[in-house]
Amino acid sequence: MPLPASTSTPQSPSSPLAVKPAALPRSSRARRAVRHVFNTLGYSLARKDHARFACPSLPPPSPEMVRRAAATFANSFPVSPQCGLSEAEIGQRAKDYFWHYPFQFGNLVVEADEVHFRGLQGRHYKRYLHMFPPLLSLAGGSLASLTVLDIACNAGFWAIQARRAGAEAVLGLDVGPKNVEQANFIRELTGMDGIEYRVMNASEVSHEAVGEFDVTLFLGLLYHLDKPIQALERLYDVTKRWAVIDTTVARSDAPDGVPILKVEEDDVHDQNLSNRIALVPSKSAVPLLLKHVGFREVFWIQNASRDLPLDYMTGARMTFIAVK
Image (cartoon, rainbow, N blue to C red; front, side):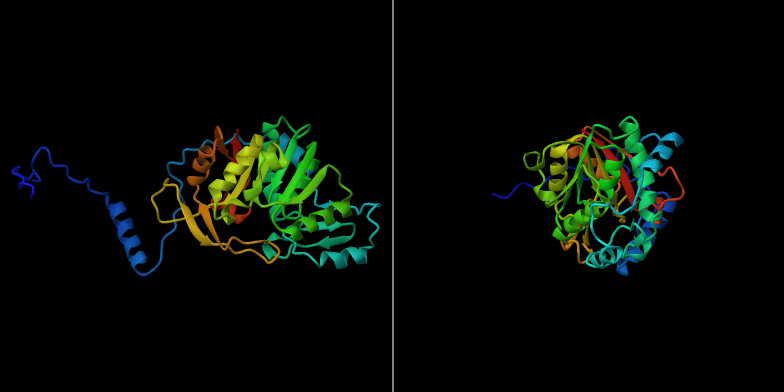
């Protein structure tokens, strides 16, 4: 049976019950018009996502803490007497690997294979001074008596820094067998103890498989993942106190402050394994995801220095510390 036609009188624009859409400011209308033109042509305008970022920042570390962190950093090492390899043999074996991080072993400098990663005091040293002083501040000045898990450890660069910062024991995990082989090669050259490496996918990490660690490092991984929530749930499961997350963040033409996961093609070098696609989180999405999986508090690390890589200075890459 058909419904009877409505007998109510439509509201006119002047009726007190009618809701008139608020007029956009002229500047907003202009931005929308420009964006519409670019979208019509097949382009999108990336925003910097500065507004309404509801995530507190950590206080900047003291100059003394920065000096203390700098004093423990090292990517230049004498060759261990127990190594048994000549400089020529070390150089030949080094050619078997892709070097994401630069190192020096004795007189042999092994540069990073990507130009913008090169230099013993270059990009990664600057990243270290960005991330480790705030972490050490939270930990009371050092990682002494703490255990550290480095997920996606690559060749062990950050595992080494954690051990040098006083960590009692460090476990590095990486999905790439060649990366773990390279990390063990570096451990052989340096003779550094207290670090273990295993082949393991971030999606396989669990309390049952590896235990629980005071500090977990999740550096340069989140933006490579096609299942980021699952990986962060695993991260939460093995974190006892703090997790450090360093990630590229997605830009989009979505409104500022709107959390998104942007689908991008995952492009890595041959020694790393790729998911082919990745769901890259926006600046606003990272703390939302971390709290969703259970972390109690999330803080972001401010850029305390102007001497940082460009992607940090422009906000294209950020570092967060999640508290369990």
